Image (cartoon, rainbow, N blue to C red; front, side):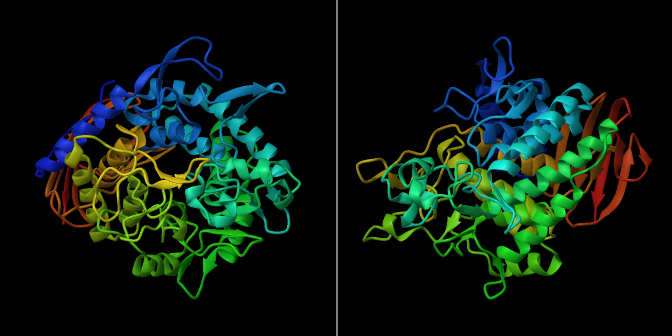
Length: 470
């Protein structure tokens, strides 16, 4: 893996970056599954795992893998799809499979691999069709399913913990009388998952355009966007609710959900401003869900659910990107430095941290015998790639499109100078130096010549890019 070298005016950021790259590298292992015919290197979920997970595969590719290890990222994405009924389809937990589309699209943007794009377009189209038949509500115009990251019952109110088991999927088997008849049927429509379906439709149309096929998903994307804003937007609270269901729903704050709503353009300007005005955070970063569900509380106030109240770095990374995209640079700086400090405290990127102490903390959750403390998995890949995302996408400002890279760096007060060298993009190598603080590009020079802040997909060779902010 040839990764870009980072040097900034902030030594802590530099050290955390090296640790993040080391974590990603250490979590690349030989693996065979899906449509991989032989063992090939893939990105696994972390030191506590020996396989990729579909959502981890997509997130790690989206965050960093597509840029720094594209062949490995492609293997990873291929390992979680299969042939079914003569075509490709995405596998994994049913509610978070569709996030694969985002990882696949990012991989194409970074590589231009049309063969992979053809495969990806088929897998995304077949998967959307499958879930339209099994988990889509014609009445609500939304897809059923738990939150993207929330496979544990600690992400949900008491009724979903009735079976007493740790996985939300147990509800479908043991509380069948409460489920819908179609598909798996867990009667929940979550914000993050429906934001992902919206983006999958957008991406499917973009894939079709690149391949010269008919673009046929725009109306479905717009329908879901409208439904999200109708069902989830809470005018009184000025933010999006967590999920909707027949038991009364939940108006808690879902960190991943509000991040996606902003990043994907589902929230308009007024909604974004409202979210950033009233969002809830903790001393160690934005929590996955806030508040924590009451059954996990302890008398001294130190108890939080594994999937509610705790700080997950991969969600911090998305929230930081949402803040950067919205011009909320103080929020970006805070979440970035908290990621750095949390990692350097233990010299690793843990899966989860305690929101009040910053300790590695797996949270409390049912295990079949009651509520117990779980462990925070060590050296978690998507925690590391979250930081890499905030370096590449935000500090360096690289925004990928089918045409090339547009630069819009965050002039962070944490680092008045940023140097990112050896960035491999298609047939070019980029050496990027950014100086100054601010949100405006005062000067963009390539090999000494002033030009617009853009590198086209078909440019070849080595480019020394000097960006001055002001």
